Length: 199
Image (cartoon, rainbow, N blue to C red; front, side):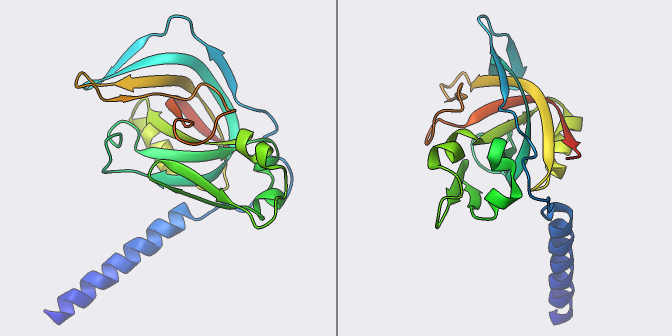
């Protein structure tokens, strides 16, 4: 019995090491990798998309190239079946390794957190040049691409900002601006394509 426990522990350790290796952060040289803010074109009359019992209403066409500041998987919360991945993304000076070296970044409970001992850039610039985004894959190919995204990578994605709702009254609204912070400030993104970009 003890032998099988040791074998199981060994296998779990090996799986954990492999997962870490596949998700290990990408190291980038200093410099702004993604100079431009996201491109958003608001829609007057959004289309509706169905995902099981969830209705998605498109609010804006959305496109950006950004650096991945953090990547978090979700499997058990109310939105996990719709948006299994969150990406914290940065652009402008929030894509510069020299700046990010002085900022501690984490994610949990669908939020993105940052902490500094001393501001490398103004606080407001951090707030408007980064965001936590809930990613809805449009198909299995996009889902697999999102699962392979690594912290530090530069990615380009296209899709829509959407609102989500269920007949039982559950709803999840997207932010429509990069200017907000706190609860409700995350973007809900229906991802049609996502690709890594070489700096």
